[in-house]
Length: 312
Image 1 (cartoon, helix red, strand yellow):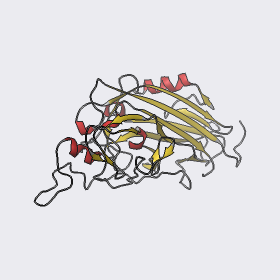
Image 2 (cartoon, rainbow, N blue to C red):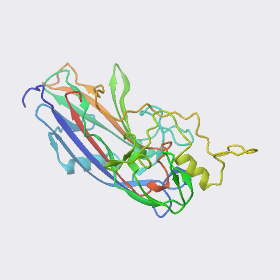
Image 3 (cartoon, one colour):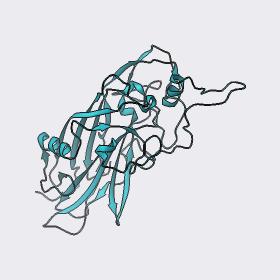
């Protein structure tokens, strides 16, 4: 292997999670019923000269091109097989999670409904900084859905009962990367799609709504209230009696990889000639996202991750 140069060295991970409905119930927590299941996925992992990647924190098999069969076997062995179910959960920091009632998720991630696994990098050069590269992100297939209630969507657009629109589960998803520094696990980035993202295009009326840390009435909360006959916009003599969403806090997120800090810096003490760094990836469906409602049930989610040694 050649020593790292200043050229961009990229490692790519593409993970496609196919989310299939359980029965005919609706998706989101707003109906207080079913979840979705991640039962099929495909992935490729490649890297340029100078950097190698391994799945897991202690896997001895490093690759510049990880075969699909290896990735599939690893994820199945980590619990994300045919029995895995992805739940609508929430997080204040991209590191720890609670359900929509505030109960902590303390069991294994595959039992709690989110995806988590580690990636380990190594190089023959010490102190190499690893960044997320442009081209990383979240995407999903369009899910055409006719609303079963009048409601105001996340962008403030009125949606009528029976009105069919395309919706994307990627708009309600997040991913984060963390690493251990000085004995403490620190979240390096929480990512969500850019404002107005709408499939492969943008749309100001129906695209993604970037919340950052604040929750809002429009979108999922208003849909829930409408479905349950609750008052969202009180008139004289009335009071708001809908879902309590105020005071909920989400993690500060970014929608770009340009100018971001490295997600990990490889060590400076060699181990049999190599220098290592470990990161943890977490992927979840954010229950307080205004685009997280019944339209998303049975959708497909894809996570594309590209790593570079040069800051974008």
